[in-house]
Image (cartoon, rainbow, N blue to C red):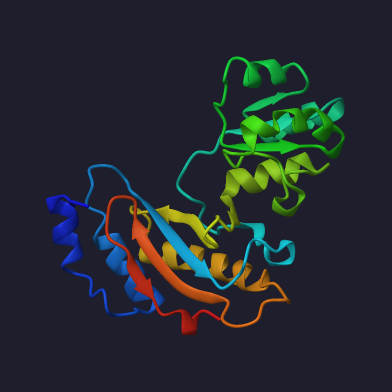
Length: 230
């Protein structure tokens, strides 16, 4: 794969054979974010889990202390007083059954996170084929199926992110923007790692965190020493 000049220049600062400490890795990733937009700093963690076994599926959510730097649009499926509650909490879109055809037939997807009260999951379930592949399906483990819509919306707006294993048993998550300070990115990283360590499946044998890389959207990855993350 041919890389651009900027990428190649940034890559010169990073030794691919070295596993860096967190602070140094974040500093290097931030330095290599040289695109003309405010790049997202992402973390990619390869785990020793086998997601084919239900008890080794990792999925959860964590509120990053400094947020993600992204404005998140929240859709809440609710009814009755919960509709008003969601609106008061700052949800961008609120509704019920009437939103199904808009999403299903018109392809409306102008939202980043979907929250639903448990009594609406029968309705939301009909959108499984649309929302599922996009990772938008509400889930109790991620705190997006709840009666406390105020807390759910507040947390998401404050910088709550979801983490889950992909098919290769890797977790990919943003921890902020290149414009964040190194301290803010480090705080967010530590909160994420603490949550992932807490989510370690009890049935897992062998090494849990196999590798960890931090990288800007358009730049090279920097390896982090995982032995210090446990």
